Length: 259
Image 1: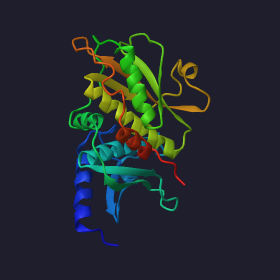
Image 2: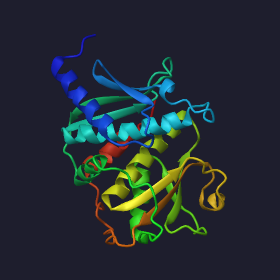
Image 3: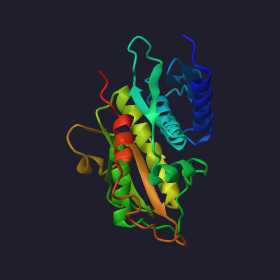
């Protein structure tokens, strides 16, 4: 079925904007495809095939991050993006589909996060850095919950200047990897918007202290260290409290129940 010209132009603009934003890998392991009424996210394993990741967990995490960029780009253009993860069991390479469902009033938070996609990530913790204030870490945990994940603080570690935390999901399936990737991207953009530094690693299972902070049924997905530069102003907590109906709707659209 042919896609109307106006809809295709709008979708292609979103694809370009989403591709320009930073993701959790330097290599884009995914590709967007504009089809009738949808934008599909396809896995591209030929571009990201690490020997130690035969199940494609890293590919799903990276693709989840790209989904956040796409959703934020849609919001800037006034579109509500409805996301379905793994929408077609017969086509496992289709990781997600995005439908532009109608008009959307962009929130201040979405503007700030989208602006962060135009800035590079600061991924190297400063030796002179410090832990961000506790209320700020609490708000970052709230950002993770909007994507269906949890951010659990870890005890301080030797030679660690910042706040260590683990990003977890309920389960360890490809759908949960996609959710973890969305949560990770949202957290990274949130730290950029707050002039914080965040580094991360995917090997979180064997980190000391993880079992003590996670709940039964939670799977550690990503280990993070969040740092405030020594000369940076203290981020103001409460910047994004009192979420709008549009923001809550965007959160529900990000992780809908898949029939």
